[in-house]
Length: 308
Image 1 (cartoon, rainbow, N blue to C red):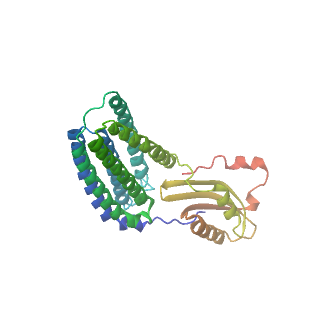
Image 2: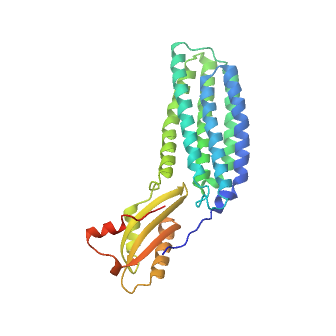
Image 3: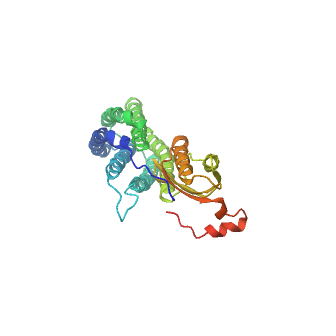
């Protein structure tokens, strides 16, 4: 028999309007920054624009996740659309790898023959970008402490704000010293800074799609906590995975002592998982010790058990 489930996440919906405002500001400035990079011939500005593009995608992913999470599960998608977030993150990460590779290659070419850069235009565009990023950070800050989805969008904008500061510094150096090589140097540094974050994003998204154990989840601790529930003798067939970045799920078999109230065991175990590990999507099957042998060959009895 199984325990009940909890599917709600009102915090995802509460901050939708700030996400829309941040997306609008970021998308408009992304277009302006791309035009500015082309007019000023600044690779650093183009690199920052690429990063601004990932911000836009991150906000689109966050909004898509919020809106699709409202759609109820149906006969075709029994878990609803919670995996859209991970799919979007995979696309985001792969695109960012491609952009970073281009920036690094172009930066190497410019080291050989640095082109002239319009430092004044570069400075103006980067300054406007810094203002846009600071406004977006202000809009997203309130929700960043309640939702990993919002936190991811907030961190994207925060890191791009640092990129804008670097471009401003580069524009000032070029304007004062005329040292044009600082432009490709900054572009390469921004590209190298983005790549590790991209790898982490891809790894986390792949972990969700492959039904891996969520980050921060300690299986031995979960097993010990469940086996400490009164009436539980043993936990086996324990599986923990993530429906989405903020929705861990668990399925397990619990062997109960003779005479134990199986309904109470399931309720106590579900309550502990929610309180200690914040796991609220739980499927717990109970079986009496009389039907469960203690010898290792007994594992063969469960080899055909199927898990979602």
